[in-house]
Image (cartoon, rainbow, N blue to C red; front, top):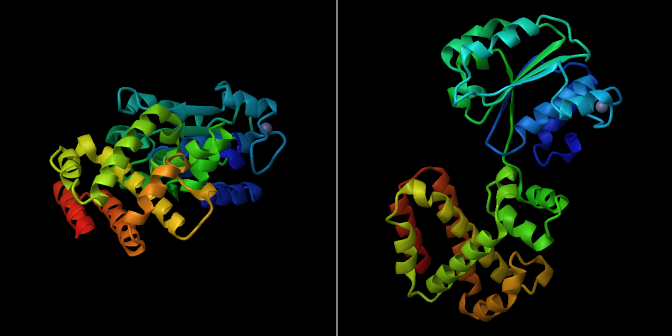
Length: 326
Ligand SMILES: [Zn+2]
């Protein structure tokens, strides 16, 4: 894998490639951002690019060094990960000792600390000095999806690169690159909030089932008689049980609304999110007016945003329902 096959986060890749071209890659780095957006992959590509025998600002993936790093047997690239959810102080000496020794076969020694927020205070404090002044031939990359749990003394010693969720279009493209059909990739990209890893793990049969359920709820809401089934399903459940389910249902609602709007505008069927629902959508299209469809879309987007803001879920679901029907 090289920079150009990592989906999304173009801004991070650009910064790193420029730094590689100028041979100014910071020696202490923190890759921060949500889960599943390619932080570890990017760290590995950077480790390869720093040691690649052919390229200067990317990995070639074919030279001996790139291949050895991919296979996990390059002695100068060392990964550290939590053991039983903690990175213990006993795991840190390898960084403290090896960082000061010249690389054995590569140009640069690279330490990748995955889920660095799992370092306890003792582990974190033990590497402050090396993070403060790492030798020029050593790079330490900390990876975290929970920056709030990283000690401020560590953060201040690292250059932070903030990763963002991968855009839907980029997820769709990545899934198609993995061999998913266009229609499936488009739907799957809708459901994962920019988390490519989650997209890869989705089960298509399960998605079909969830979409069928979402469609019946959607029809019931349009028909004005079905608010109770929507409320029953989502309003009175424990938040952690239904949050993801509600999020996906709302994303499906959003895709249905967009498809209905596309039909109203006479757009090409090839752009439908749910082309396999075309007949059902055509039957439903006259029932939901243009203004209403636009208003629903706004309310759905708002509800998804409110889910992120951790608002009370019963309230959110009840108020969404009453507004949609209002
Ligand atoms: Zn190479």
